[in-house]
Length: 246
Length: 246
DNA sequence: CACACTTCTTCCGCTGAGCAGAAGGAACTT
DNA sequence: AAGTTCCTTCTGCTCAGCGGAAGAAGTGTG
Image 1 (cartoon, rainbow over the protein chains, first blue to last red):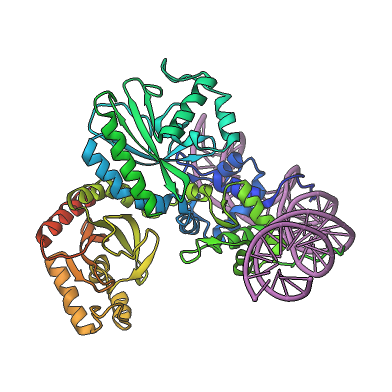
Image 2: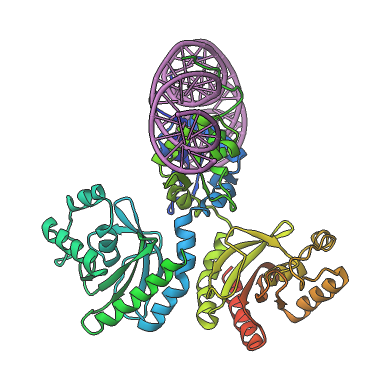
């Protein structure tokens, strides 16, 4: 029968997003109490928010549990970066794959990480850790270095301040990395060797949309020695082609 | 200096969704005032909501305008919109693309329309109007005719009662279309030429889950003449493969 | 069948987060 | 320089939202 004081400093918008964000790839379906726990909200509050979201089809019920609804799916597809970019890039990725038989990757910067949008797995026995939808550090991958080289200053500063070695070949000296990034900007491509995974080398180039770098395109191969020039030329042709269609 | 009365009966959740829903296929990028108008909210309210959504990356700024952000994209992808179907189909779609270099489409019937679930964009020389998440009429597309041929009677009756020509080649005679649909059922595939878009032909086959047609798989090409048989054979192999996994 | 346990739903009075008009800027256009 | 359009900030009022608690409904165990 007691009323209550609301928690100060909370906005409903943040709560709504917290509820939606309770869902992720490993938890695509959740019970009410799980949502409350993951969003760190009281049960009754969660109950009300969820009920309202369901009424707007932002969530849907499956039995006793909830899943993300069609409404969010519809809206999410409008996020322009990925859809347009992936469509424009799709045929070029296949071209590069056909020409090189390497693992081909398309990635964008997401905050301080690399987000992989598309990947064509090559047949070569190269261990590749990237997955579509996964995030990796920017300082240790080919596409990452390209994106980092062209990222805003504050992003670069944060990333350079925390260089964790992934392999013995990872560059962990901020000064050296800065110089490499300057080289990437100057040359127009990046080339890395075993910095993320032993046995995997990569080359990458930026994709430009009207002089803004919006994404990076790269390949992963067992070794760069042989045909580094050819790989980079192929990547650059494709990157220009993609950029032209954005 | 005057305060104000809030509009009663409004929930923040509904407003947040109204703001997000202001974005649609024809308006993927909006200025603040446009969002306010489309969501039917006061400008200052919209401003605050949008700012908060941007801070949570549910929206993003592009110059002076806004677009749907990566956060919503992430969450939206979790919506179980035929997820098993899409998962099962994905590798086969890539196979078909690699074999034909055509635009490949995966679609289901949604009410009286075709809903496109997945699309691999081929070479740009063929104009293709379908987009993932978009809906098109069933009577003028390859995948649509397959789905229409196997749709319940009442759906077919409603669709046949309202045939609007999209191009000069669109079939608008209900009788003729009925005959074509019978052909689709008999032959196991549909082939259309420029009925939706000039310069675009398509072939499509049904995907069966235990003898029920649950989806359609199709390709769009500039012309069907050359290798119609090969295309359809490839589609049928893939469709069987997908069906086997459902 | 009773008991414990977990999960969901409803209730209700208090209060600060949200509201929206207005005014002040900023950027373009005429 | 005057008009137009669009964006941002300020502010006091007030009701939408809050959340503890209690009740209901389902689930598991001896």
